[in-house]
Structure formats: C-alpha cells, structure tokens
Image (cartoon, rainbow, N blue to C red; front, side):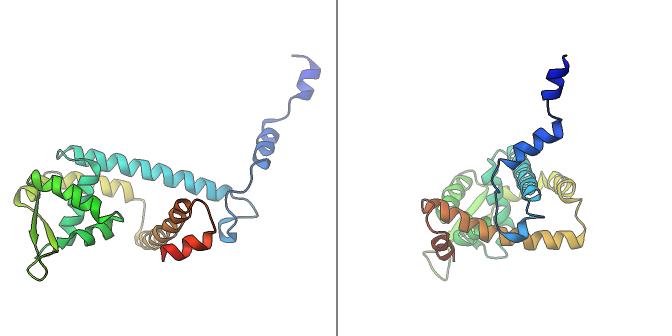
Length: 200
C-alpha cells in the first residue's frame, strides 16, 4: 500500500463519527437525550424490538404445543386469568390484550369450536357473551404449565422486585403513548395534538 493511499484513509472512529453526524436526531423530547445525543434512545428501541420479536417467538412456541396460534394462546391465557367464577366478557379480554372486541370475538369463536372455550350469555344482560375456559381447555393449558413458568422465569429472571415494578410502570405508560403515536400515523401524519386528543 502506498503512503499516499494510507494518508487518504481516515481512521475507523472518524468514519463512524462522520456517519453519525449526518443522521438527524430521532427524538427531541429532552429526557430522551443525553448530552444532546439520541444514542441511548436508539439502543433502547433496538432492544425493545429484539424483546418484542422474542416474545412473539415464545408465544408462537407455546401456542404450537397446544395446537393454537400465538394470538389464540394469548386469548386463552387472558380468559383464564380474567374469568373468575362466572366468566369474563369479550370487551374485558380485548381491553386486557389491547386489541379490538371484534378480534376477540372471532378468535374465541374458533377456540369454542375447538372446545377449548365455553361461551354463554350473561344472566344480567343477554346481549353480553361471557367467556370461560372449558374443562378440555384447562387440561390443555395444564399440559404446558411447567414450560410457561420456566420460560417466563428465564425471560424475566434478570429483574429484581424494584426493577420489575419500575418496568411495569414504564411499559404501562408506553402503552398509552404508543397509542398516541399510532393515532398520529392513522391521521396521515397531521398535527400531533390531534393524535393526543383522539387517544384520550
């Protein structure tokens, strides 16, 4: 290699710095910046996307072991936790999973045909459909109970009680703010204030 070529080649650190400098900030909210840099924010987003992908893989894995899709597995578990002694409504499951009632109604219809979920009208309001896990559904979920616990312990085992509480609070806040971001997208990228009002 000639001396002239060596002189023209910039150190790797300089090349990386130059590449970073031509990218605009991906966030402007002051608490999300450190020293004017969005590096930590971008790392967080990458980590969240990785976690999201892995959670989807876990859900699909557990669902496949009982012959249902990943979303159907989530619906089953939500019903199991919400049904109490008298069953739970479609709207309650939809709210817990942050999905539409139409989606829950469709998926529980499929699960009812598989005899994993029981559906009946409420005695208080015949228009309300109450959902509960059937005897066959309880047996089916029971078969993977040990795997569910093992995977969740491995996935979240890095958290102590304080970190778990903080994470729960932060994620709940992000559920709200992410809904506002989706409202902004659905509005065609118009005034963010419109999205904030629509999401309330």
